[in-house]
Every structure is written in C-alpha cells, then in structure tokens.
Length: 330
Image: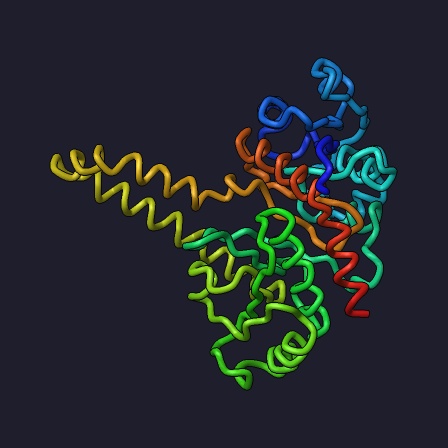
C-alpha cells in the first residue's frame, strides 16, 4: 500500500529566483497535499520565519552557487543546503529531496551523500517529454555521455520504475533511441544494447526514432546522455519556436487577433501541457533516495510540482522499485 504521510526536503536556496519562489512553491504544495511535510533547508534567517506544523526549518550555513565546480563544492561545503538536503534523505528524516540549484551539484551530492542503489553502475537523469497519449520518460539526458550496453539496460529498468511510480503505468513499454527500427541499425553500442534489452527488459518494444519520442510510441526511451541531451534541447527549442511563431501569426492582423481570442483557452492548455514546469523537474534515478532536480529558472509553479512529484515518487516506492529491478538483473 502506498504510504500517505511523506516528508520532502527542499533546498530553499536553489534556483535563480530563490528563496522567494521556493517559499511560495512550498506553501502551495502544502496547501494542495494535506499529508505532505516539508523540511525547508537554508540559512536560518530564510527558513525559520516559515516554520509551521508541516514545514520544519533545517538550518544550512552554506550555499553552492551555480558557477562553482560541482564535485569540489559538494566536498568543501558540507553544510550547504544541497548537501544537507541529501543528508536528510540518507538519515531517513526525509523520503525525497527537491532542488532547483546547480544540476551538477545536486548530482554529485545525491551520489556521494545518498549513495547509489546497489548494483547501479551510473545514476541517470530522466526528462519527462509531453506526448500525445501520456508523457514519455527519456533517459539519460546528460549525466553519462559515454555508456555501455548494460548501462542502457539499467536505464530502462529505472525508467520503467519511474513511469510506474509517478504516472501509474502498470507495464511500461521501452524503446531504444536509434536511427531506424531494425535491430541491425545504428552503432555497435545500439546493436549490442538492443540484444540485451530484448533479453532482459520486460516491455521492450525495439528501436524508436527521434520522431517517436514526442509521439509517445513507448512509455520510456533510453539512450546515452549526449544523444538524450541533444534530443531534449531540440524538442524544447522547437516548442518555444512554434509558440513564438503562433503568437506572432495570431497578433499580426485584426482578423487573426479575433481568432486568437477564440483559440486562447485551447492554446493555454496546450502550452501548459508542453511546459516543463508542469512536470516539476528531472529525477536523478539510481541513487538511494528520491531526488528531483528543477530548472534553475524554476518559478513557484515548477517548485510546487517538483515537490509534489518527489512526494508521489516516495509514496509509490520509486527507490524500492528500482532496487528490486536492478537486483533481479544482477
């Protein structure tokens, strides 16, 4: 049975507009989820004024800036809000951690402080891609530029667990991002990975091409971090360009402005579906605890959704699902 009450540690200092948007986002998450508890991590002057029955301040005396070297900063700033947040998960004081701070520092802290799930070779960052039917989980999107075939099998196991825990998909399907559908297509890495995925991953549906990612052909798509990051940034850029062009087209002439007034609700709903803030952030999968990393530009809405995604993943035993899946493969 999924647990009801859950505690999420939140980095109050993470993001370009912290701590203001973080505080606002946390308040909204608490109002939406009556069984959510938050450990708000940051400098005393920032976090203590927001103490409440379900929001507990945890003082951290240091902050890791966006421009700092991630691993060096994590090792030297052991009382930073990111490191303390990860430590709260390791000490079982929280079931999950959310930060919109430095992605590299969050990865380093989660890996070094929380630790990896036994058997996981490399943690991977997943991105949620809006698709026609339901979102697609794409991983890796930047943590591992060079991978081995076995790592792609682990990514598939972790991606399936995330689709199950967060999106409620009972039996997620998995695709391998490639340049063609046939098993013999692509690099030697892709061909070797295809064979392993077919042998060991339930729901493996074969190769998928770039156009299949936003189409939602499979629930999970696995690839190396270099290809995944290029795919993600291309989709984000295309989405932004299309909405910019639509806005220009609909505001140029009087008759298009009238049409825009009619289309506005539908376009707003579509923009919300495509907005990364809707999905709260990118999960770092493979570490021994729930870790959701938000965009540095996250607003209050993104923080709210990120905290609630962390809570949902914890309630539905994301870490345990990954642990069991990796153990079965070993």
